[in-house]
Length: 345
Image (cartoon, rainbow, N blue to C red; front, side):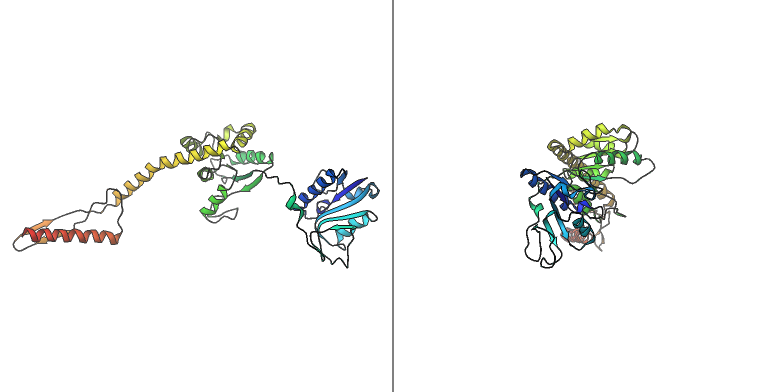
């Protein structure tokens, strides 16, 4: 005789959660380890089991209802209990919504919590299976971008893998994923195992934090994403016109390796080193364009006509003075000039 394992995953409107399914898997493992055969009852969208409404109760020595809240007088519960009336019932990891002195339909109850006792939820000891967390960061449709092709290929890729997909939007004038600041966007990208993106800054902010990317330039022949990746040396980049499922699958596998994480960090370090000169050029340009040329003083004396025109030069190390500190520099230069004139006279 078999055991039938049921729960809220056995009802189409049962609102089954990840916890319900993990608890059911654990119960099945326990039965299997005890040498017991079993069936599992499921309703769509879940598969891999039977419809309990079509099951003959005589084929089962016991019925296990596992995980979640349970109210014996509830509509779904009543339908289930009526179908299996006369069978041995085991309640496992349930929250009993009525006091047990009023209602307890189970022959054996190992509750999660009831009016009598509380036990830890059994998913604390369920097998820990973690999958990659993959960020998907897509550019919005634009005239030059073949985004329909790239987005379809990306969705097809993630659908072929058991992964936790996190949609990430880098736009902040309007944001489809609830992010509000640059720090929130970068923090989310930094916590991914892998980012698949058609956005330049989806790539940059990921690599900056050592997260490998599958970077796809949505313009035929490539544009800014392709140029950027060639410059910094990140090789996991495709243009829309060279995309294939096979290439994306290989890239996906590679990006989950430690080698890819090391390469991502190297790209970041290389980029930061190259940008030192950009920073210096910017500072030089901004200083030159804003360098003041002021006549500090013009002094006329009865006995000596002396004219002096001096310019304040900005610190050669590009230290930029505030208006207040600049005035102090001017004042100090005037004082020095006056002292020189007194000694000269």
